[in-house]
Image 1: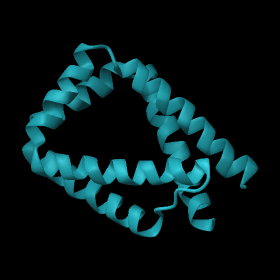
Image 2: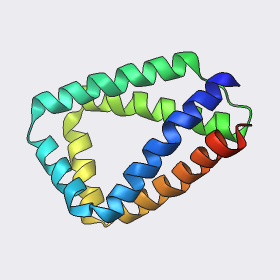
Image 3: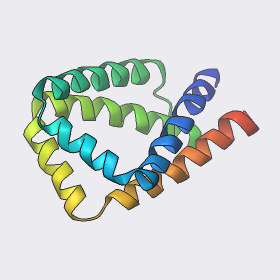
Image 4: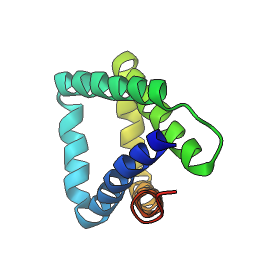
Length: 129
């Protein structure tokens, strides 16, 4: 359970900050994405970083019992899968990002991140189950 608490305390503020950033600085996040798609080396580096973080997290925490454990495990696997996709099929990742921008899913993603970030932050710092 200590590992879950650690990851809850790590992921909560990160997701909350990104979610808020998407609403407060939306143009910045879109520009960041647009700049990233132009830089193949950055995509490669991010893919390696995402994959490494995902491997570490899933190796250390792959527990599916309680809701916080499930959420943390999904975040770990999602990070690993995102890293693999960045390295194996970056063109598909790029097209998916374009679709997300065009279909106005960014506010939905930001909302999900805020809710999840608030939940995990509350759990990790105020409940510390």
